[in-house]
Image (cartoon, rainbow, N blue to C red; front, side):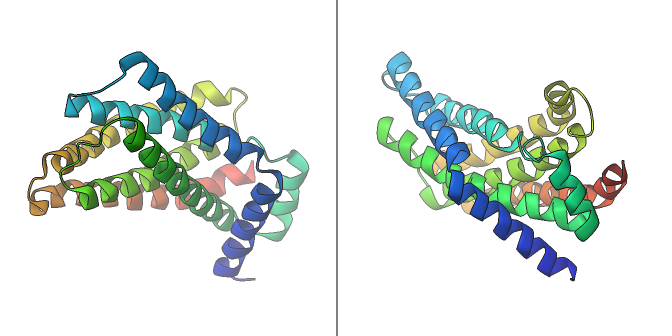
Length: 220
């Protein structure tokens, strides 16, 4: 079985398991909706566009951590041993990245729609802001999947994941918030090309590092 077929099979497996249980995705959706509602109860209204933008990305960040941190932890040792016998480590990490990307896109759309309905949407360029949300979803998925794969090989997953993710996620958030602010203000889209290029570069680098590093971790 070649790499593409292995990745397709593993993604299909994850989607079927998620569809059957629905516990994880339901809990994540509940988390997003309840967090937005709590913010509404606390602020009632957010007139400052900068605060509106920052609050949205904070909600999305913590939702992504809850959604992706369990990527490898939820797999039993027996299932991992079975994967070790039938597939390659590159297929496993790629399938996790693709599955988490799909999950994060769904989660981000739900969060954005819910957030926009509860708080007045001040976005000047909705298309560019949607691009920022889409790129943010992919970036969160790639970074946290890589970190989750590394931390799964240690005995203290949450601590290691926080330590490893912090140096990557802070610059990523800075670029995302800057891109989203450009969309909020309705600036010319050509101004945001550099931020989009940086986000795409981060994703390419993260996926490349995952493909290079994970096979060595998988052997252990």
